[in-house]
Image 1 (spheres, rainbow, N blue to C red):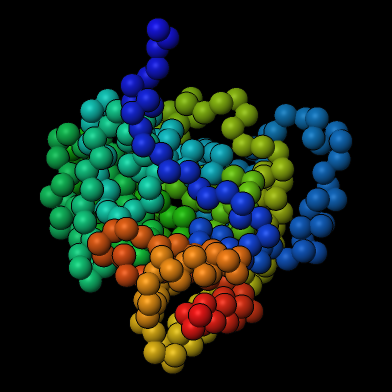
Image 2 (image 1 turned 30 degrees about the vertical axis):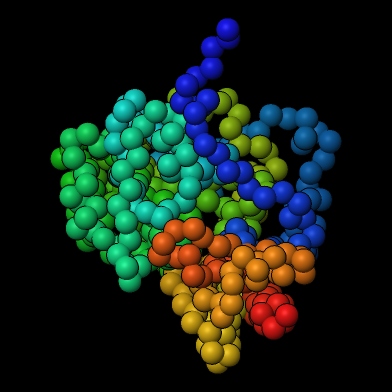
Length: 351
């Protein structure tokens, strides 16, 4: 009988829903409309047969991203989306059977990667009011911990951490010989960042993604940020050509147009504010923290409402978790995108 890694064999996976092309996508925190078409067309014009025949070189992108965040290229590792950065961090810094402490609920790839790698996932529940239990997180970090992972702001709820809270967690992790992983996928929707911890502590790694505000989910582009020593270890774990050249090219060109980034952030903020205000005026409980999403409590059955929305080609996210089971999570975008969603939502509620 052939060998199968038992951790892989026994891992329970739920893969993303297929058939989403052509739908109104409000379920996975993508930009519902994407980047400006003029910009996309301009960048696509740079992709020649010779470009496609050449192996990718990440350094030009890394130089621009380093300048964007005020660091050096040696502080960065480009990855195939931030979920691959997560995989590499756990592979490099966590021992088999070691603890990985996270808030729960959280991005599902934390516990999935723990399952695949033979790590012990230690979930710390959000408080009933959805606040992040920093004191409980600190208590969960013991000598068994190899990685302490926090999302700033949190996914799925959107609560962030203060810089002082980050310092306390980094300090406790360091005392226990653990890495503090800070996942900032949604950083641009709140602006506050824990990036200064990278220069204050030798055990902090920050992850960023180009899938959210940068609107490149299809191209899979992420960045790990840390001190040069930890980055050198992560680079040893990556394939020779981890990120494709098209993703790197789009990443470069976006960073060259900071005014476009600011416009994307502003449009999402306007759309989110409009959606929350409108839903509340219609008598719905709706709340929004940091992140490009809101939560709304429907008046009827969530499974039935989701089915009606699906028939309309409208995709939303629901949860089985006890804290969130009564809510739908709605990805946010421009006001126009949110007007389309609310129209479909209200009509589906009345069916």
